[in-house]
Image (cartoon, rainbow, N blue to C red):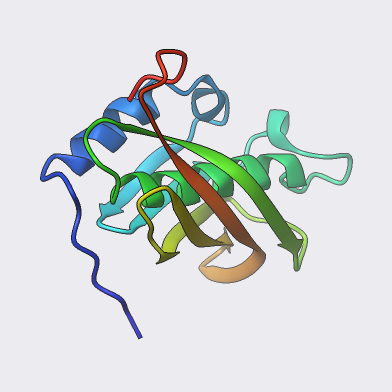
Amino acid sequence: MTTVFEPKTPNYADRVRDSFALQGAMATLAARLERIEAGAVDIALDWAPSLTQQHGFLHAGMVATALDSACGYAAFTLMAEDAAVLTIEFKINLLAPARGQSFRMQGRVIKPGHTITFAEGQAFALDHGRETLVATMGCTLMAVVGRSSVPA
């Protein structure tokens, strides 16, 4: 069942793109936005040797980083114009080695709120036409308003 969310600002996709462009972490991963909808964001990245652990799999820290951003931006799509987003907490379940040529990280809002939003993420490895779920994440996010140290 897909839930339809109403964004608080019509330019939410532009806000996500602008914020994403400022993330050094996503640039380090050579990650890119593939989908931006109200309550849903997909981030893609390709396998690269600099992102692996000792067995050649995408490192769990890279998976967690990209999933956190996908969940955060999914939440951000539903936040007010003057809000920024920060992660409060996340839990990741690593289900299979992250082996593939590319990866898709999906963030989906489960429960939006004025201040606190809960999202879930799924990471998929794409390997020679085969798609494998490699991780899931539960992510709690906070809308930050009125703090000069965290601009919207």
